[in-house]
Amino acid sequence: MSYQNLSVWQASRELVKQIYSVTADLPKSEQFGLTGQLRRAAISIPCNIAEGYGRKSAKSYSQFLRIAKGSVNELETLLLICEDLNFLAGTTALRQDCTKIGSMLSNLERSILRAADE
Image (cartoon, rainbow, N blue to C red):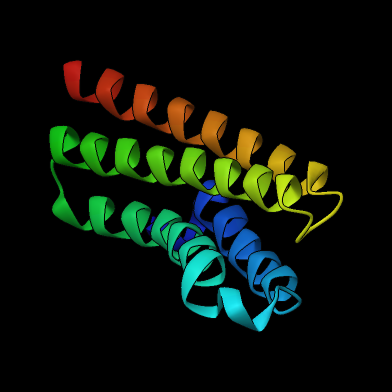
């Protein structure tokens, strides 16, 4: 099995596409601010899942999944800030996706650590 078969990796790639789509509408003045930060945080999620998978160590993989989870929290916060600044409206669905992916990452981490203890 490859990391590409993981539903959390697939969901996080879909989230990247959604973030790129909504950030296209942010003000040009935010190109190097919120736009870039939102995109980097989103991209970090599937990249850290893939990088951790490649380490072949449960402890290392777990660490990369925690980093990915941190990026999920960062992304969710940035979406709230965009709403606060009236740059984006209705980010509820995206934030729900963040919550779902965060939960999936936690479940995957528990599974990996449990398997390593066996």
